[in-house]
Figure 1: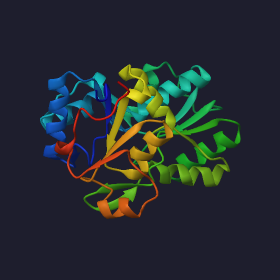
Figure 2: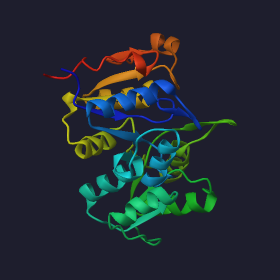
Figure 3: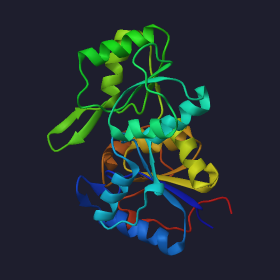
Figure 4: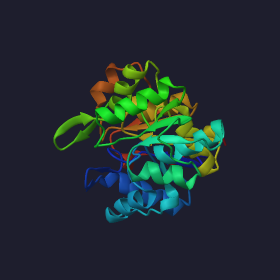
Length: 259
């Protein structure tokens, strides 16, 4: 019968930097042809949904802002569900700030109820000090995602997980992460998609984030070897995907599902 919904990673699955991955494009166009619902799932908290959708459209993908699920949006949804709309101290870029503002969170520098950290190229000692003091004062500590490094043209550079690790060391408190491979972003994505986990496939190139996320969420997973994880690395790993392909054009849409 096949899966009734798809959650699809971006970088390394659909594109590399500014270059389209042709198998990814063919895969999404086939989803469109079949009328299967799907969402784009990203740990990137810096961009607005429309900015992510525009990048996808520039590469030839059909994409609307409402098809993008980011760690920023998932963080706002998780905090609202857990805490209501507490005053928050925020470190991050416009994507995160917009998601929190849109959800009704007031920003507060003094005595916040929660500290939220997303990727922030301007993060510095003063910001780390403010975050640590607020957390030691009782604020809850959230990170949009735990990626320690990010692949760039320069090489691997510090990711949000590294910023959160510095604050955690200073505050003596570990953050609650929302993005892949943690459950909150999957729960939020499935809610947006309107499909149950046993009828949804998560697709990605990273064994430690995309595939581990599916495992944590009780979902089937499809690992494609066009990005971070190589076939050799997968062979040596104890983490298992439900399916693996060299290229997404190999995927058989009749596989899986509960029908």
